[in-house]
Image (cartoon, rainbow, N blue to C red):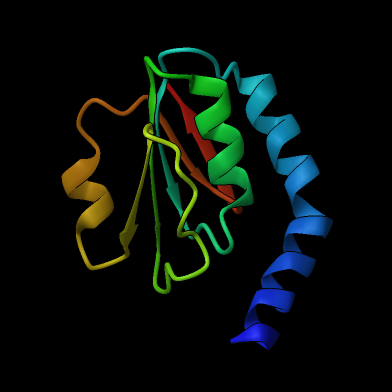
Length: 105
């Protein structure tokens, strides 16, 4: 487990700055409702939760969510990725994010 946490941490160190800069450019702010698919260790999810504040929310998913626990963010919902989850939760969301694709409405 420690090796996987280290791997995810290394990916965050390389990619999160560019990801959060791109999301900021898209206008992530208070009140937004966001979906992140493939959260890894949760760096971008925690950043999104801070940006949307208490009036917004972030749903983040991954096949393995054990690295995104204990965050104590009331506006961050962590769920295991299962077939159909992002589709089923898409209503009311105005930002869908994956490290490979970002869309905003």
